[in-house]
Length: 159
Image 1: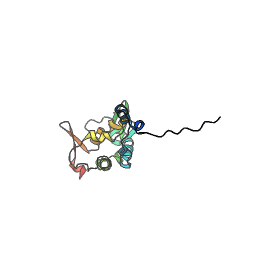
Image 2 (image 1 turned 30 degrees about the horizontal axis):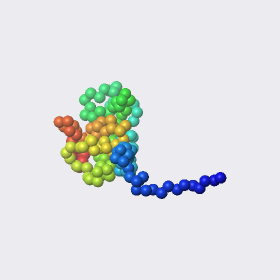
Image 3 (image 1 turned 45 degrees about the vertical axis):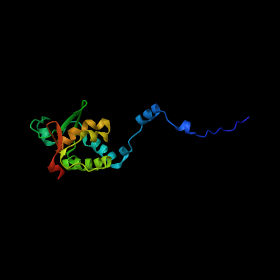
Image 4 (image 1 turned 60 degrees about the vertical axis):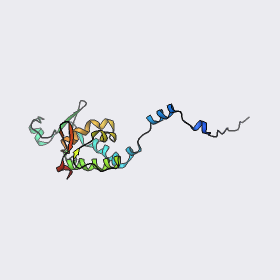
């Protein structure tokens, strides 16, 4: 004997979530802004901003990797893995352009052209495994300078 398929009609009672279910549901919700193209592009840009291994520019080769006296670092150590900044695509103006687009998409406001950079807000739209690349890239590109523990956007880059 084949039983007829039972259809359960939703009632207000079984559609109402308990406060515990609401809190648990919030934990797994993803901010839809993170899927916006400028945000995805910025995360891809961060991933591609560094190449594996120490810097092999003429200056670093001549000094055998000794960066003493360099204004900005060429090689970085990310959790035991050495990487070098790709100079051709990470000039301060390039970093600023990518950051401005992502910032506008995420915050719906223009990135300030000077003053302090809110790194906490930037980290909200950057994938957690890429957080460690932000400060080295921002400082090495000349986009920001650390002043009294604050990251100051450099006016000459922003202009």
